[in-house]
Image (tube, rainbow, N blue to C red; front, side, top):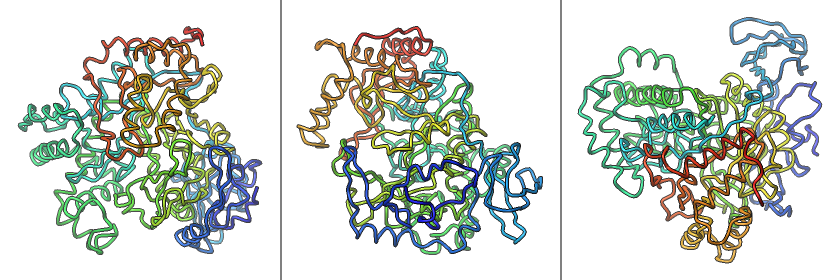
Length: 640
């Protein structure tokens, strides 16, 4: 392991009392002073060297931290920790001033405080419980839902928050304890809508395309032309462009007629700067496009006089986008009331989006986040999101990370962190290079995990980390230390589900992998061949390895029997959470997303059954009973 002094200013200040540092556990001997791993290991544990041109380019992008960063960067600690400061006054969140003499009292309040040293230094002090909130001794099963695909007869072309409310009620009636949903984060409010939930414009606000228009305050005073809205569901795909155009036109009429009144005005004032920035960016995007980097130079930074003037001159447009968020807050609260809804946090945001506009000085330019080549993608992956520069994130007091976690975890009791390994290291791909020609950059994992734990504690929300694929040594141990649940898939694990860890969410598949029916029938393989996502030989070999995860099925079994068998196996798992997809429970053969299949309508496939009919579907009921029995401990062991 590399000693922390070799990392120089890339290493965060930690409490001196820690005997085990997560950052040490995950660091490699080849991590340089910029936090770049100059070598990396693939899924077969073969080592690869990063080419010097990539290292040079990433060093240029990362840049040099200010010399006094270590004296002003935030301290992240826990009650009882010994700090690397002799004495200081701490102004706590509630205004109380506490004097510390080199350590925090065991009962020191959790939260975001300000430490003031006798030398006049002021720096943030983040005090975390160190562990995420978990309901003690509680196991549950639930549904994983692609909300956009989950349409009712009243939907306007896309599943919405009223449909989520209906799914939540069905789940509660079946004895489920949670619903896991795709990211609901907002995209640019432009005519051409981004389809992927994992490339949002912001991780702090929701997408108004999920509004049930008829339930927006003031909708009863406007002709909604419901028949035209419902007709948007007649097509075989989800047409977000047409849906947003229709919803936006009607929502604007409601806003102009009603305006939200005093309730909206109070809420808008309470939200402060963050909402103002989002609404202003959205109003500018209406006129100048979805990518702030293509705007006039005077609009490219949120703090210019020209942006302030624009917001004043276009006050109605700014207010409209703020009002949409208020309406979303009302409907989301109603949709999730009484059940844990696990919200999904994408790994990043669109480079031209609102968060990138606000935090452009913290994000890296000329690079994007991705993944190196692995068993599922020989070319590597480029996900298109600009990464946060680790030292700049610290210099920003971790505020971009804090706000993203807090906004996504709010109000529903659960958080799923996509690609949780990104808290430890991220694969950066230079713009001029292919996805395979990147390198891993190290992040202050211990600080980030402690911040997640603090937000989890405050929201009383459990946290799941999506740790699929290549996971380096130390990551899962660090997750367990912070009570972040791991993720286990039947398609990935070689062990019997009965031997899976208890501190995990267990599932059969994900949105990026084959459904059970698609795998069993060969329909998914045929589509992969059609989309040329790999060689025929590799794809067939991959299908064969997944079929081995379904022992005990006769060759002539129906897709429904294959689904039932998969969830009987899953029910063996002692994991804290057991998750079933609605896609599987409807024997859907198409997966929501096929990575690398750019000609395919990813994220645009509706479920074949409307929400109202879900509770009576035999396979939906059977899967629900199977997992309920598994959680109750009465499922027994399946043959195999």
